[in-house]
Amino acid sequence: MPALPMSSEEIAEDIAARIKSGEYAPGTQLPSYRQLMDIYSVSYGTIGSVMVRLRMMGLTVTSKGRGVFVPEKD
Image (cartoon, rainbow, N blue to C red; front, side):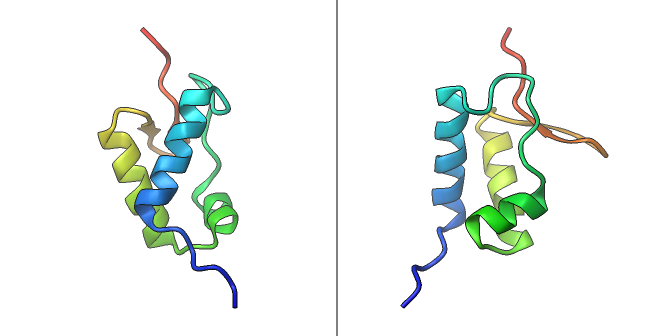
């Protein structure tokens, strides 16, 4: 039986850990929604929820038409 997909909360925690570890460094762009959908085997809506959660945590910023980025450190 295949494993169940991760929840939006679990995916957000995973991406947050990658940001905090430096895998996604400040100023870098996160993978696209399509790439994240493929990586985590989830729907567009789930990735949308993840992006909202990460933005609310202050871990990402969205640049309309460009993508989602890890903000530069002050």
